[in-house]
Amino acid sequence: MGKNKLARFTQLATYSHVLQPHKDEVLGGFPMAGKWKSDFFKNNQPLVVELGCGRGEYAVALGQRDPQKNYLGIDIKGARIWEGATHSLQEDMAHVGFLRTRIEWVEHCFAPGEIDEIWITFPDPQIKFQRAKHRMIGPAFLEKYERLLSPGGAIHLKSDSEFLHGYLHGIIEWKGLEVLETYHDIYGQIVDKPDHVVFACKTFYEKMWLKQGKTITYLKFRFLKGGGVK
Ligand SMILES: C[S@@+](CC[C@H](N)C(=O)[O-])C[C@H]1O[C@@H](n2cnc3c(N)ncnc32)[C@H](O)[C@@H]1O
Image (cartoon, rainbow, N blue to C red; front, top):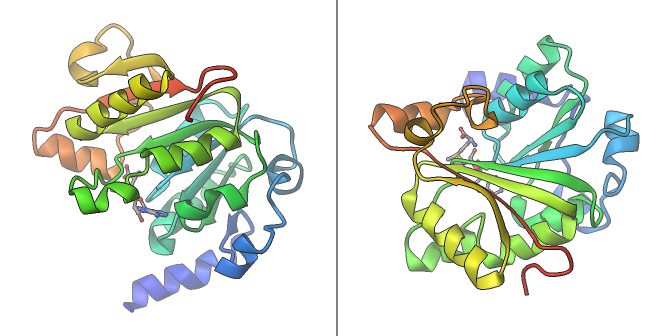
């Protein structure tokens, strides 16, 4: 491991707004599940979770935009989380935190209905058939998210992948979920709303894809009341 990475890991371990539970702690009855607002953020604001947050840029940007909500970025890579965690600490953002864990274990990290909104930005589309089960918006993951979201809670997917955008539209139609907003090219289509939340920030990956000339898609949807993923 490089010196820089090691220094980041050491510093990350000292941050009280970053939890890095061991697998056994998560799977064996995670104490923070059901208590994020009261015990971690120590307020009763809505909870927004960013899955696969990388450097936490979106969680921090959303936190700057609307401090009346709590934001929790989740990623497995500590050196990446360090960036957002350090930034939010420097900016004194007590309503932004991070959890280093695997998204596959997300249902152990929260109580049912505890999350009010989910953001997923630029996930790996996992295009190959054998990798389909790893798609962060595949049916098995959606079932977990549905249990964790409060009634009417939305999921936002911002992506460089037309494939993933179309794939999610297919699932939404199949399962009878509700599309709230959809754009296959945010910069080409949302020209009259510069304050739209999709423009809250350009993450590391978004900048990279834009440089390569890719268009950026956005899809916001929710599980219908009493319905959802079967
Ligand atoms: C392509 S990057 C996008 C990062 C960030 N959202 C952005 O837009 O810059 C995908 C991120 O998801 C994380 N990730 C992928 N699979 C994961 C999993 N199963 N559990 C936790 N994190 C995961 C990776 O570590 C990586 O930081």
